[in-house]
Image (cartoon, rainbow, N blue to C red; front, side, top):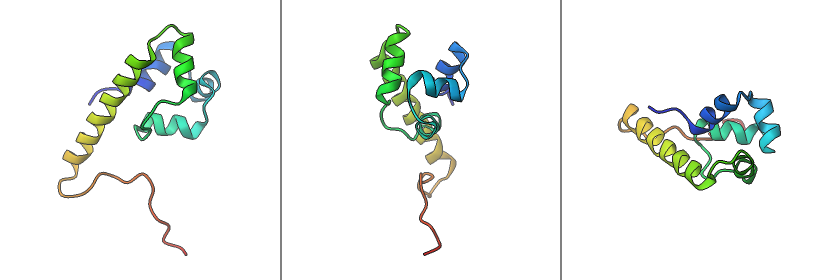
Length: 94
């Protein structure tokens, strides 16, 4: 299983979660979804951050999509006969 490109980006520039959220102008929850591979698209703040650092946003987004696909295949192989882990579960309390 390969490393998440968002985590690699944070490690390359030495950012922790809070610093990256401030630099990319995203919320902590958006960063959580990015790091877990749940986000379908990169937020606009991350694209602007990549442009400011001189990186190609389209290439980075393609790497992120590849990571998401590999992560999904891993989850499907890990739990045969069961759907992949759901993002949110229904509350049992009503």
